[in-house]
Amino acid sequence: MVKGLCLMGSKVGIPRALLYYYYFPMWRTFFEELGAEVVVSGPSTKSVLNQGVQLAVEDACLPVKLAFGHIAGLARKVDYLFLPRLVSVASREYICPKFLGFPDMVRQTVPHLPPVIDVDVNLYRRNKYLFSAFKEAGKFFTASAARVYLAYRQGLAVLKEYQKLLEAGFMPEEAMNLLTKAAGKKRSPAAFPLSGRSSGQMILAGEEKPMVAVVGHPYNIYDSFISMNILRRLQQAGVKVITADQVPEPVVRAEAAALPKRLFWTLSQRMIGAAFYFLHAGRVQGLLHVTSFGCGPDSMTGELINRRARAAGAVPLLNLVLDEHSGEAGVFTRLEAFLDMVCFRGGKFQEA
Ligand code: SF4
Image (cartoon, rainbow, N blue to C red; front, side, top):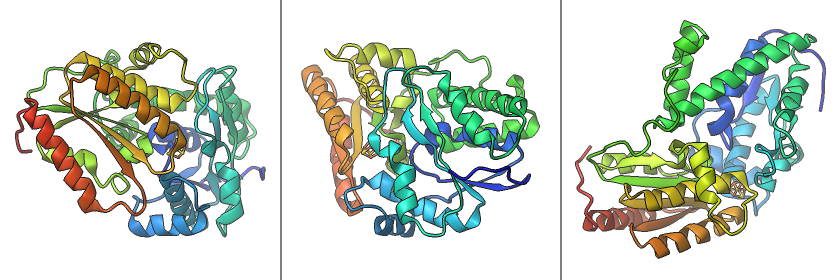
C-alpha cells in the first residue's frame, strides 16, 4: 500500500460493483468528510463486462469479472482507488474468499492503476476493528485522528439510514439518491427520509399484487445489466418485488439458526434466512433465487433453499443462474413460465 497525505479534492475511485450495493453510502460519506472527491464507475454495460472478462482470471465468477471491468474504466480517472480487502463483515463469520484476494488480483492484471487503498476489513473477532480499517484509509487524507474518527462516525450514521431505506423497500440506487438529497439539505438525523421508522416496518405489509421474493447476492440482483433487469421486469409484469434486504437482520439470523450447523458465510446466511422467512411467512407467491455461474457458496445456498422450498411445497421456486453468455431469451422464457406458475397458484396480476 502506498501511503502519504494527498491533496484536498483528490479523487478516490470506487467501482460500482460487488459490495458497493451494501456499503457505498458509508464509504462515500467518509471520504467526502475528509475532503476527497468520490468518483464512481458508470452503470455496467456489455463493454465493461468484456473488458473485465479479458483482465480477470478465467475461472473468476461473473460479478468479479464485471468488477475488473469497472476498475479498468476508473483507473486513469482517479488519484486513488478504494478496494478494501474484505475478510469478514460480521463477528465469527466470513465472506467469500474471492473478496480477500481481490485487490491483489487487480494489481496483477489491471494496467495504469493509481495507488490502491486496500485496507483490511476483518470483523471476525471484534466489530470495533472496523474503525482500524477507516483509520488506515484516513491516513491518506489527514494527519488528524479526530477528523478521521468524526468522518467514520458520520459514515456509520449514513449507513444506518441507508439500511433502513433498504428494509423499507427502496432499491439501492433509489436509497442512495434519497440520501444524497438529504445530505444536500443538511447532514442531521432529521434530514434523512426514514428517520425514526422502526426496523422492518414495511415487511410484507398488505399488498394486493402478487408478491415475489428475489434472493441473491446484491451485486447480482441490483445490477440491472448483470441481472438483465429482472427486478424491473417483474414489476412491469404486475408483481410486487421483495428482496432479502427488506428482511431485518434479527429475523434473518433467527431463521438461519434453524439449520443444524451455523453458516459462517455472512451473505449466504442473509439469503438463506430471508428465503426461509419468505417460505413460511405465507405472503409471497413465488421465490426467485438468482445466482452466478461458478459461485461456490451459491451452490450450497441454492441447495439449502431448494430443499426447504420442496419441503414447504407452498410456492413456485425458480433458480436462475447468470453467466456472461446468458441469453436473454432463455432467461425471459423461464421467467415467464415461473410467473405463469405464480398466477396458476392464485396470484392475480395487474399490469404495471
Ligand atoms: S460469493 Fe460467489 S458470486 Fe460472490 S464473489 Fe464469491 S464466488 Fe463470486
